Image 1 (spheres, chains in turn purple, red):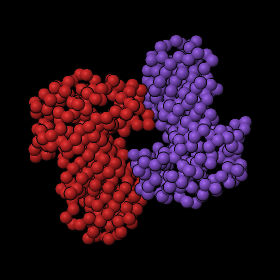
Image 2 (cartoon, helix red, strand yellow):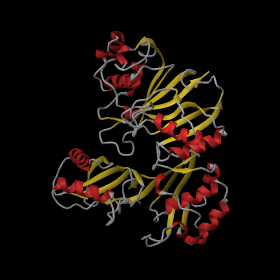
Image 3 (cartoon, helix red, strand yellow):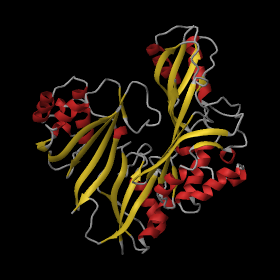
Image 4 (tube, one colour):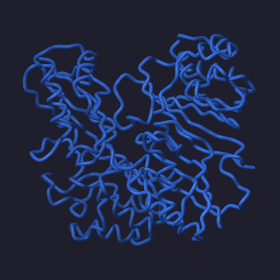
Length: 246
Length: 246
């Protein structure tokens, strides 16, 4: 019974997120249904991370077990054929050993967040970026972001629905860089709390427009209180871009 | 009566192209209707270039005359408000003198064409790039492309519907560069024939996959015959990205 290790890319706009939901379409459901048509049995797919409604993936590791043994190439081809017309693609497929687990074996998760800093509405990037109309100082955002790097109680940046056992996480990297009107934020950690990236980005935006200082960001972190949160960024600009395994 | 010089960005997917058509929505119609609601008179908008159905624009110069005088900033804001929910945005607006003409004053037009060279279907870039599944040699494409640079009779690369007086054009630049699985082609000329960029890209793709040599490309050019065309690339990957004015 082979275990397949997939890398998935998807456009998050039509989905409630990765995880199966009663009330709407999910990437997990689309993938499991596609895989079940190939394997001819029920399939449970596990992803490295859960993503919210509207969040995109460039490279999300996923695994599932199949009683039907196909070469990884043929499995990828079959899944991509069955996934049509969903905007979900298997961009890599290989066999993994039975101990490899997309979620529990994962030792690092990387997200990108794209802000487009301009006044006109988005067209080509509609749903794919957060348009912020106030002028943002990306250098100030990057400097302030370093206050969040390291091990902290991230309660301020955690949604009420977070299922994590502890609010203490180690943020390995939070970089902010501007190219013309695009501001890209890269966040890397072993794991994140629910809404953590979007909450950090929302507060960094407040720093960028001058509403908050880096000290205000530190105070919000130290408060360890959801009420201290400045703002949550929308899902549109968030991309799961990679995961690390030992 | 001020003349407004706009820069437009649009997602070409829903449109028959820039130009007004009897049988479907166009960017020109959307803009003229938005402008007419502001100026309270009929408006004719002129663009630097016509684009086909499904072709995108990052920065298309356009002008129109208005009997109502608003500051350029207020005109931009009003147009963007009236354009909703069209995926068309005015990203710059200024006043121009009455001699300035988006089309006739234009001395250079620049297009980008994006190929994504991979087997899996596109998701985030669906409709925004040409997926080519055969391995492409971008260096060979770039080398061959130089055969097309300069003044030539581009009849081979011209659609049957082309309205240009002459098939002789001067191609100033045709660069091909790969970054991971993305191949970006930039074409620059004073003006192009109808379908010229897509026809050149289609033939370069044949060079990239090894079906054609650079000599085959030269032969097709010299033939000056539409029958010698290798292949036409789809509109999805084509972007009007800029124009030059003296």
